[in-house]
Image (tube, rainbow, N blue to C red; front, side, top):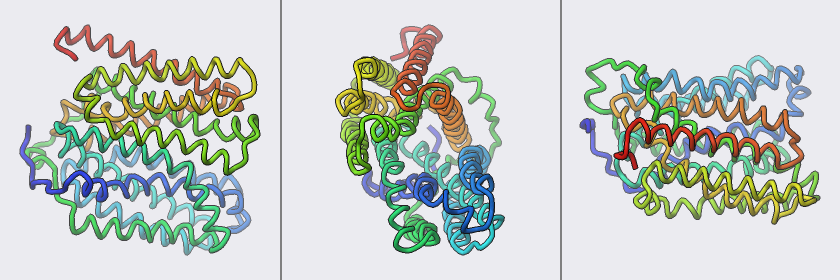
Length: 400
C-alpha cells in the first residue's frame, strides 16, 4: 500500500457525518427542484426547453465533471477539490436563487453541478484512499446507497412544501444553507488523504479501461443502481395510476424499500467477510433475478398491489445493497495510486449506463407496468453473472 499524506483520525460515525452531506446534496439539488420545473418558464419568461436544460445539463455535468476533477484530485489532493466544489455549490445556489433571467438561471445551475461533481469525486476518492482495505468501507458504500434511496422520494415533497410556503427561490437558499455547515465542518475536519506517490508521478489512466475487473464490477453497480432508478421512474405510475394509491400511500410504500436497504447495510461487514466481493455481487445478482421473477408473476396475475410490486422490490433492495457495498472495491482494487481518476470513471460510466439503458427500458417498455424493472434487472444481472464467470476463468481458482 502507498503511504498517506496524513492519518485519517475520524471514527466511522464521524466520517459518515463528514462525508454524507456532500453525497446527499448532489442528488437533492436535482430532486428538490422538480416540483417547480413546470412553473419556471412562466416565472422567468422563457420556454420549457430552456428550463429543461437546467435538468439535463445538471445531470450531464454531474457525471462528466467527475472525469475532469478525478485526475485533478490525484494531482493536487482531495481536500482542495472538495472545499472548492462545496464553495462553488453554495455560491451557485445563491446565484440561482437570485436569478431574474433564464440565461443566468441556467448558468448558475450548471455551476451548481460543477461544484457538486467536484465534491462527489473528492468524497469517494477519500473513501477509497482511507477505507479500501478496511471493512468500514463496505458500510460506507452501503449506507450511501441506502441514504440516496430516500432523496428521490423525499426531495420533491420537501421542494413542494418550500415552494408553497416560501417561494421557489427558497429552494435554492435551502440548498445553500444545508451546504454551508457541511463545508465548514469539512474545512476543520477533512484531512488530505491522497497517496504520497501520486504527488511525484503522473500515472496513466489507460490501465483502468484495460481491466476486466473494472468493467465487470462497474456493470454490477450499474445493475444495482439502475434497477432502483427504473423502479423509481415507474413506481408512481404503477402505484398511483394503476393501483390507485394516494400520494401519501405511495410515499410510505416507496419508503419501505429504502428501509430494507438501510437495514441490510447494517450487516454489510459480516456478509462481505463471509462471501467476499465476488460472492456478494453474485448473490446480489441472484436476488435481482429472484425479485424480477416475483415481479413477473405479480404482473401477469392481475392489478398491481403492495404484495405484487413492493414486496418483490424488497428482495431486489437486499440485492442492491449486497452489490453496491462492494463493487467499488472490486472495480478499483488495483488503482489506489490513481484513486481519484479511477473513482471518477467508475461513477461516470455507471451513471451513463443507468441513464441511457434505464431510460430506454422505461421508454420502450410499458412504464405503467413492472416490465421495465423486470427486463432491466434481468438483462443486467445476466451480463454481470457472465462477467463474474469470465473473471474466474481469467484468474483461476484463486479468485473468491
